[in-house]
Length: 413
Image 1 (tube, rainbow, N blue to C red):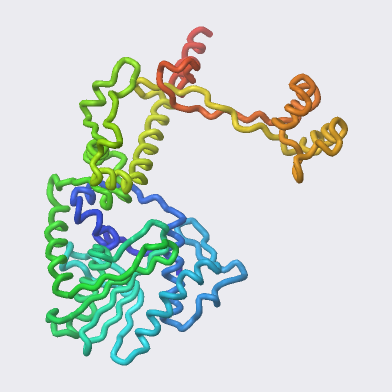
Image 2 (cartoon, rainbow, N blue to C red; image 1 turned 90 degrees about the vertical axis):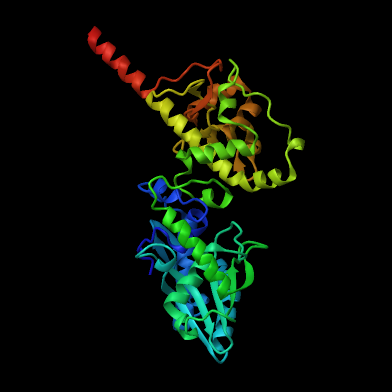
């Protein structure tokens, strides 16, 4: 448990991305996928429910004693929240599987190469099949906190297609007519997330043909790119993608030419007022907020790094930011407490804690504070921040500037 799994570049978990943007596959090549605690949590939950379904354990059996799994460098402990989260879904799967005529498949590797490219596969969480009733249930666990819905869900349909090819297509003699499919997304930590969607195997197979056409496009010399909410949310290439940048600005009514029109102060022309944004575009913008925030933060980090190493950041510079809140030196807190108790008695505390340096300065006055306490206080180091070039604060030297200064000093010596 908790061991790395093989990677399938066109696996169902990525279908919502590359089906919409075939160019994202090549764009992501070589960009490592950053490990996230949330993803590790999801992996542990999947392993927990797989053990419970396959070996008859109860989730409560895993809680206590610090038990858990290490995944991608994160240790995830089995806890009561996780147990409560899986209980309803676990009971549902068990109840269906216990009925006559149902077959249960848990964490099953399925072949999706017919609808993608050779060698591609996925791992379906739960597949339930009743041949006599011509019923199929695709059950997918989600432990994340961003809502996922079953309607037209590409990932779940990908698992269904793979399971048709690998598990149950032959049970129906490869005839999808009359076969009903229910896709269930179990997302216990998101109110309103998850749910079920009823469709047919015929419709899922038609979707598979569309997926195949898009999969072929991913191998083109210059595969098309198309930005959007679903495909860009977790794309590793979005920070470097011009299509994504153009789309973001289009959504807020800007074009790249507008950026070149910024006046000498560095400010952009006035943007369209919110009330002039159409209701449709407003909805898209609200759904875009997490992506826009991520994108802007990525741009900020790139500009910050360039400023640190001396690369051009036109119109901006690094300056000293605010100092962090003052605090007592770790090995001097007791000394500060002794001084404050002598000076202020019981008023040395803001119950139940000792007065902070800022509170003590207010009580004692600046002069007496400086004389009695300042030597016990850690003032912290200001963190550099990026600001417009016209900011009055002096620019912080970049690493390149510092080395240039050292070279000049060496030449003088």
